[in-house]
Length: 91
Image (tube, rainbow, N blue to C red; front, side):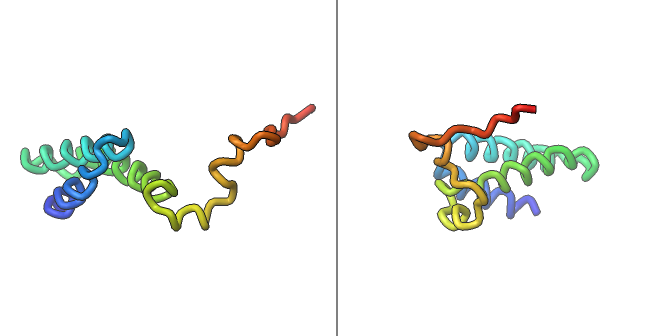
């Protein structure tokens, strides 16, 4: 398991200029460090949830994964369009 995380960190390091990728790498490095210190599985649960959530965010971002845009319900650039305004409830 540690080898997989280390390999993923190596691949993700290519994008260290990007904050999301950098945060994923930092969390993976922290997990590898905790694994090397032989910490129990229970102590890694929260960290692993954070890694999983950030990785999900990473793969859902069209800049990293162009196919993700096909599955998006609302285009990401919608609010950047000139004549688009949010719907405001009058209730």
